[in-house]
Length: 340
Image (cartoon, rainbow, N blue to C red; front, top):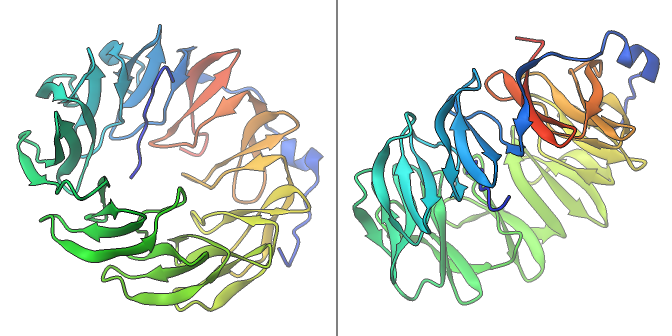
């Protein structure tokens, strides 16, 4: 589940040289000037920002929908956002009005119509009226928010899943670690006996545990580690990209950042190097652009590897809904995608 929680908050090489890549890439104009201490990407038309130690929400014009007044917040999901004020959590709508008054000791965002909350000694999930739809059994030592309409629950050192009715659909049987993931594309990476494999939503193994580490599926492929090297498998467990990478990350918009020779580059789903390794860091593509580090600054490249927005930022976020949060000189603002 996508969220923003503010506390006190390579086979066939394509030839690129730095000079052509930087051609035409210069300073950019801000859509929302740098003024925030922290800032998130836009989601459902609004973004979380923090200033003066408090969180609020702005629209794409930079106008406050809810002024900084909250101690902690989650970004909007399904039209509502969980916010904490005075030590209690409630939910506001996109106009900043409380739909569910602050009352919970803890709360997370809505997913599949339900939100994970705690009220006194009562744990469970509420609907959008604020009523408990599922009250969790005390035997569950931990429960997560719903993802693909299933929620992780833990008993002892094993985890399983419940459905939206609270029924256990996958018995707790998998090793619980800090690397436990959510379902992606209907498949879950799980660890058993120190090895990783993949199960479906019934708990049936699709790929038996044999990897040193495994990540979630994205665009039909999943990054897996074996023998200290990373590659990508398809949903049958067959290698689509041989394990010869130093590190591998999720595919997005047809490309994935990988590390080769201690540098970040990008490959396609056949394992071909589309953008040669040359960056100090690199994230996935979003809306046709990917953040990369060249030298010590962040900029943005397009899918040809051209530096569309030159390296000039201290920190950045991905483009979402046409805008990206960027930090320069200890303040965050927003820039517009040149592709829009």
